[in-house]
Amino acid sequence: MDYSSNVDGLSTEIAIKGRFTFQDHARFRALVGQVLGQDTKTIVIDLAEAEFIDSAGLGMLLLVREEARKAERELVLRRPRGQVERMFSISCFNTLFKIEQ
Amino acid sequence: MLDFAQQPARFLTRGVTPEIEAAFLRRNRAAADAAGLRTVLTGPLDDDELVRTLEMAADACIELPAEGDVPNEDMLSTLAPCSLYVSLTTASCYRLACAHAITAALAARAGLESQAVETTETVLQEAILNAVVHGNFEIRGIDRNSASGWVQLEQAIAERMASERYGLRRVRILASWSACQISLRVCDEGEGFRAVSTGLPAGAAGSGRGLVIMRQLTASLTHSAGGRCVEMTVRR
Image (cartoon, rainbow over the protein chains, first blue to last red):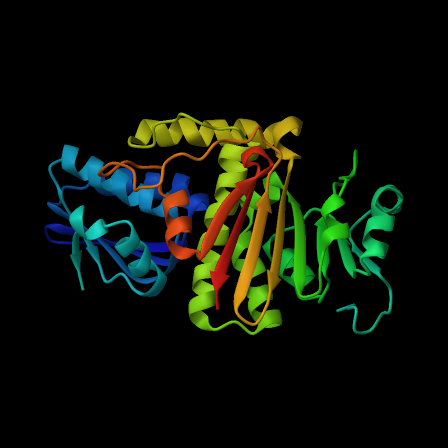
């Protein structure tokens, strides 16, 4: 997994690129800690360039959801594509997240 | 790159000591010869070496340790034509993008369409993840709904990776193909398990989705060897 993050006013955006799998959990957890430390109201995770996600990647998104809820931040998942969109559908993520195209 | 196309040998080796190679052949040569296999024996792998090894058009790719005991590869004698067998240490399975590399090799050999490639890689990734974490590392019961649960999981994995007992256990992947389907078998060396749940985990639970995803995407899924092996078929 590669990522970039950008703070834009009241929103922090994380763009995930490549494969987002079990091997990435330590780095992703550290990234989320960093983002939650910033004083923005909304966290956007952009998945347009995420090529592949596994069940552990889905679990990590659920962890962000829980941490964002505790910190009273809004969480948005943006532009899932291909295999990632298919995994969201299987896991009924549309009932758990705000997903934007 | 040295390949079976240039070399009529049954066995090629990459980064394996002569002693380890000899020990492996003493134990497994009869099974491999009986099945008429082309086998690559390789030393400890990284992502690039795994890809290069799988590009060698072998029927079987077996990662061997730098020293110590060599594995007993009984499954070699059961390989049919149009098959690929990969045997890796748990540590390599955890570190490397195995599902991606194996699926790419399958796609090249079997001429898979993009949807079948995506499905195969997805279910193979879940099966390998289960074989590593719950099978060979025997990690169960950690609540992954909190950051502290993930830290606990990371610590448990680091301990298992450093342990000879857990880290040197193997994950074995057998893939075969026909005109209409891909068959996958993934086996670990853990204590086994009994699959009971068939639905999605409740609400936003952070774990328990892997088996559900595998069931959703495969035409069939069964467990054998007391839960140490999972067999799946994917339609092409």
